[in-house]
Length: 500
Image (cartoon, rainbow, N blue to C red; front, side):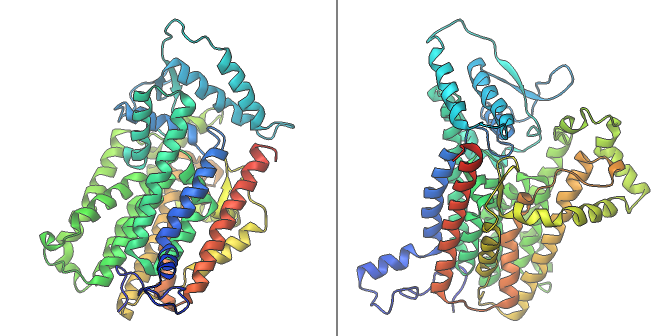
């Protein structure tokens, strides 16, 4: 029987009836598997995207660059503050000057006649005019702007790249692009590994990973790429465990326990709302088996469930809310999570009412953002790209899991619960940290935050439908979707940033 951990039978995919001994047929079968296609498309289109996106033009890329750079120097907790208590980092003067130059350039987007071609021309002119040597300058304090509260989990490839860049003496641009390429390589490997664990959902994972929002997130310095990769791996391991029926009577008997614990912990620590993905571990066993599996379950999920609250306490829940509170003319308590928790205790309907009002206002805008509104939310794709990619995305979810009905229903139920819990968690975080209750709405939530739910949604749909799609059709859907996503991304970035 076809299982998650097994590939499709050799020569079962598009070999046109040619014998397995025919080398071109074997090669075609290999390269048309979703993991291989993911690597090819991600490396090719991701590299082009990383080059095409101007420095610090990605969503929150300045903040994530600073956080990763600080972590590479061992600054796990942000201790440097300015006179107002805002957290930041001391950068080498030359690095800070170049960082500030490109940081300020992004505010000129939308100015008539502005293109990044002029920005780079001016930068190179200024760079060539600098003296080769000069008196040492003191480091410059630069504000984190919201990334100070992130754990190192989502920055691991960027931390390594930043450390290597510093050892090599690279300047700002060299450091930034080395970090981009390292992140692209690492996140591509994570997704490819997840696909090999669940080939039945390989086309869905491929399509999700190649959406403009996902591709863009992997090609810049961002927490989104690793977060999606960790989530896919946790889901894949849970589904693979459900298909194999691994004995779970004792924690020590589960050969994959350590691997699951590591990926689950990294997944949970990536961002606070990720804590709900601990539920995915329950896909592995039925309710009847759960009393015997509690030790294994605890070993996998408890490290993340313990470490995340401890981290939040250590950083005081800091999310750079001064960016919102400054100039708002509102009392500071409106941005104090503890004060809001007290208000929720007094009025239990406060958060549900604000959540309902916000979803009613914003739900239609979240879908295109989920597919991809790039840059700082100011770079939409061409209108036709959204329905085409949306249709292809849904079509890629059709798959046969080759599981009994009870297991499929368990996967669907836990998946739906996880999706609902994640949506509530995201809005709760932004309610507590960003949104004054006087306005009646929750601010700051973007559709790209929900890309991590798409693999879970694919598992739910596949579990409920359980139909085998034509292999050739899925290959063409995934290939066409990947190419369309890349083309739409290139067009949007070229149009908005380069004036093409």
